[in-house]
Image 1 (cartoon, rainbow, N blue to C red):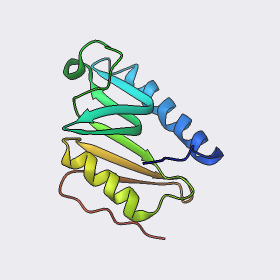
Image 2 (image 1 turned 90 degrees about the vertical axis):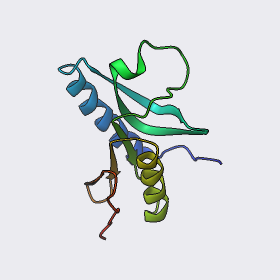
Image 3 (image 1 turned 90 degrees about the horizontal axis):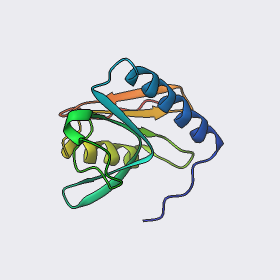
Image 4 (image 1 turned 180 degrees about the horizontal axis):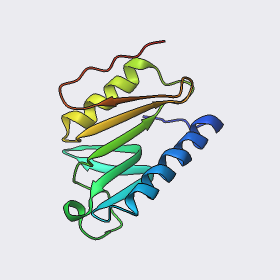
Length: 125
């Protein structure tokens, strides 16, 4: 599946999100933050979140390979052509593969939709 490169607004919001998570992790050494399409292989599927946070003990030292442990947080940032069904599907995949929390960041409105297992995404426009 082809994923287009992110445009300027999505790029800038991604940097902001990663900056916030990285600053937080400096006071929480038990966690590690991944960005730059943070790759993970959960089950037989491979995905890449815009940002993710893992428990350091769960992933161990860096290996140069995809992580096989679900993160505690996966972040998806809506791009210009990302629509509700696609974002909901991504969130559902993460939650269905053991991710504790998913943030869907909507740059257009400045909203962050926070989802946990058993919750349904609801977007208001």
